Image (cartoon, rainbow, N blue to C red; front, side, top):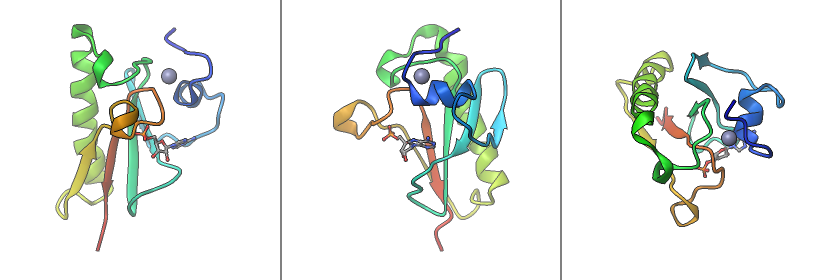
Length: 111
Ligand code: AMP
Ligand code: ZN
């Protein structure tokens, strides 16, 4: 429904590009980053194509809170909750965003 042509994350969500989902529900999917910056590097990605944080609408509140709650759950599942981890959004080119489909990074697992 929200599929945007040539969006790599839409293609992953629509299974046009194979990827293993570590978790999925009605609103989001979670998969590993292909170029991990840390021993654990997950991407929490809404099914809805939203370009960036700048493009969030009032109606997206539940999606965003779901992403954060899912990050909490995934941190525990990957045993980085106690040691600690970082959650971040890159926003637009100057903020380091390279894929223009909203995603929350979860990195951790350092010694
Ligand atoms: P950003 O710079 O915030 O847009 O992050 C995009 C992230 O997506 C980068 O960390 C990439 O390594 C990652 N990435 C790009 N293509 C894929 C892919 N096919 N599967 C998983 N992660 C990807
Ligand atoms: Zn997309």
